[in-house]
Image (cartoon, rainbow, N blue to C red; front, side):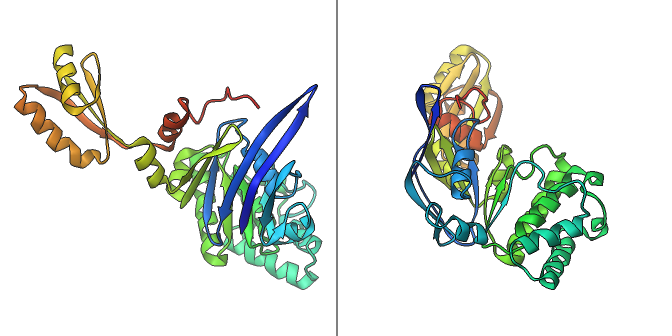
Length: 313
């Protein structure tokens, strides 16, 4: 579905050039659900715009849905759907009419466009809203209409830019329920960006992290967390002296009376570690295991949080 090599984009800012994307290599196979993560200014939006033909690459190549984004942008657009961060609907047309118009713009015959509109309204639980104006809908309902607009022509590949941003937790959960249902129904390849790390971790089967215009990590959420961050064991002792000794035994670090160890599987390692401390005469007051997050992965790779907003554009 996506095959990019050396994809680069340079912007001219006043008298200097800024390289927003620095030679990305990316392959996405049909049917995958890929989460594309990165802090503000990392290059993820620029990459998304190049892959959707909204922005020409400065150098490199990208084949999307079987066509070159630079040489055949119209053919790419015919086979992909794109749901941006802003609402796509107008304010003066009823929801069903908006979907039919979108279908007609993609070359569907009137009856075909109407049939697909009704199918999507039903699939996305929007049938009761078919005759309403977009301005009367809730945030979650409008987002579902946006997704329907991106799917009216049945694209092979759907790009979703922050699909649940700004929604309350209930609406976010509903949006994801519909996204996963669409994937099951149509087998659509999904490529999305999100600021919600727990969403990417739990929903996407593959996570790609970009920083400084380069891809720095690529794999399943579990692979990235196990290989790059690891589990942690955290204990507290009765004194700083005991903590130092406990840290030495476990090859960890001590901070006051708190000891932190990085291990491969914390639940399996904790009993053995506690037995070793008991044998050394160290009394453990508290003990817990901590699974890493995708933010921990990014912190390990870069030394800062994935949610930091101070990355230069």
